[in-house]
Length: 206
Image (cartoon, rainbow, N blue to C red; front, side, top):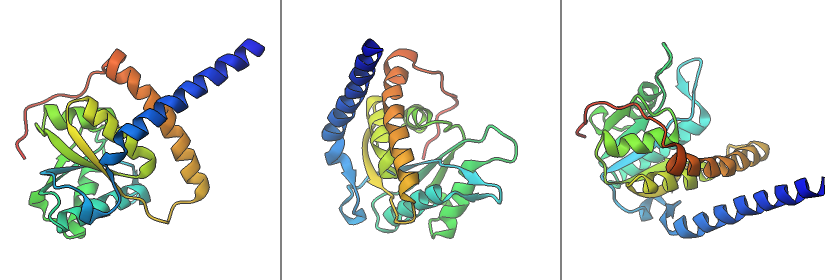
């Protein structure tokens, strides 16, 4: 029992230390003020669920609204909406695109990525399919560190724009934050061990 407790503490400490190091290294690449966000040709908006009436979840809507703000300020020229489309009648990128249009972004400035099943997939395809060398990822603060880290490790120079709003409940926020710390650790396995297969395809010029 004592050995188990020591090992558990060591693992938790390693997780925390790794998270802290990544946070310190990438902190300068995270932005909360759209007016201070550096210009990038493209922004990457990561999917976060569509509810049954074919509208974006609150989290996803906030990401899309933040991306629309960056576009309106001239901080990006194109917005890549990356989400899941594996199941019939579930088209996350299309819902994301239509939401952006309703927020004033012209459809010609929006590029759907229909195979962004996970953050890893979205970042990988950003470089391999859409040939982007740099980007700004738009997502919430509990997720942004992992997204920026993965994209940078996959060869895309990436900043992050935080799309937080006050609408989230504290308990929700705590759950998402803890979950994403562990997801960040698992991303090391994807990046350096598993290197999972990602849906390919022809290059798309945006």
